[in-house]
Image (tube, rainbow, N blue to C red; front, side, top):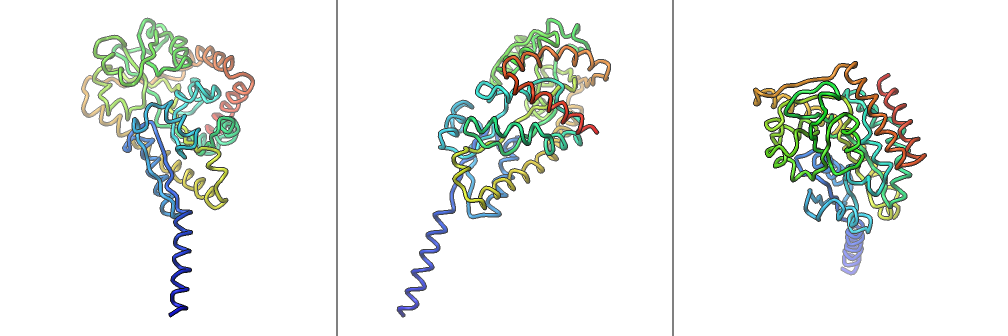
Amino acid sequence: MIKILKVATIAAGLAAAGAIHADEWKYVMEEGLTDPQGLYATKFKEEIEKNSDHTIKIYPVGSLGESADAMEQTQAGLLQFIDQSPGFTGAMIPEAEAFLVPYVQPTDPQEVRAYFKEGKAVNEMFHEIYREHGLELLAVFPEGEQVVTTKEPFRTPEELEGMKIRTMTSPLLLKTYESFGASPIALPWGELIGALKTNMVDGQENPTIWIEAYGLDDLAPILTYTGHAQYTTAVMANSDFYDGLSDEDKQLIQNAASAAQDYILDLVVEMDEMGLNKIKETNPNAVINRLTEEEQAVFIKRAKAVEEAFIEKAGARGKAIIEQMKKDLEAARS
């Protein structure tokens, strides 16, 4: 009887010890569960919970305040993981805005995969920079090629002249559309539809998944593929939290991040195609334009001013990143 009690006591102790190490980790993002960030987060959670006793609690957009609030909570260690795009982190990490510089990322799906999985800029250079801000960079992935939707067609900077194009609240994005010939207006996402309806703006940029989902093609039916950018986002962990983990848990997180990145790289291509096909099927007024290489070359030349503005803000390290991104782009294409 004593022996049985002793065994039971040991078993209870082991169970308690296991419970101590089975943590609930908090993960916040800027989008909903069915959006690209949500689908990545769900896959990440699935991988963590499948291969450990840990659990992940996901907080979709708005659950914990605005983007700045979520980042503050992550850096303070109240949250373990965050997914946030360079358009928001750029104020804190100027080098992150390299992802907003036009024509330094590919748009072909196979090239995109190589660029984000193997590129030195994405997979090496940014890690040290994010570390300086208390963040362990786990993955960077695209949510789709940026497509410009307008009410009137354009194929040249001259035809864009005078068009009021909405951008996220990033000075570098404003600079991009200024260099392209437009008259950009920075607006929060929540004001975009109203601005299109009232002609406060004449167009905007987003991947087709967002254009179709929110009916932006109904309000600005000319879709122009300029080939200038991907909408990119980054998944990070609080670095103090990460450093305090066992080697086993660190590897668990790295494996989950890699698996989720593989998953979303394929899925985003499908979602992009699905968004475009739905627009073609449901909107008879939609016009799809793709700039030729010759037409793109004019915009690429003008984008040099954006690159210079980025380097002026981000300094020598920013310049090195842009140079490496260009090398990674060429490597992906070859």
